[in-house]
Image (cartoon, rainbow, N blue to C red; front, top):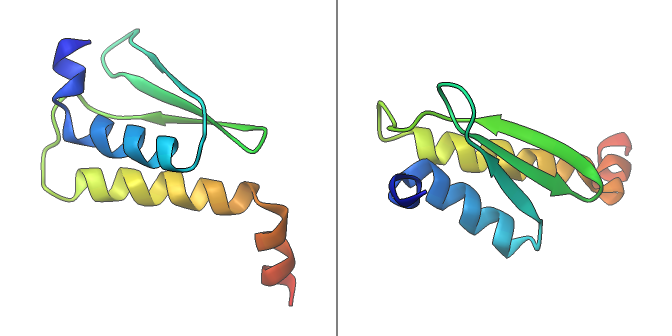
Amino acid sequence: MAGLNNNPIYKVLRRTAEENGAPFTIQQKGKHPKFIVNLRGRVHKIVFSWSPSDHRAPISAQTHLERGNQRSDPRSRERQLR
């Protein structure tokens, strides 16, 4: 887990989940770790690499998590239908 704490993708995912009060776990089986987060009752799994290949990877991971949070919010669905 020590190497994971230095991973910029993990840092962004963890911070975003904590800011939204979403419980999460890390599964470290196989080649890549999985960030498993519960957003308003829906489970999302985000697979990421141990080392990002470019500077956009943390931003992409954060955007993925934020979009999942919006999709899990029933109020955002109502706004989309209007």
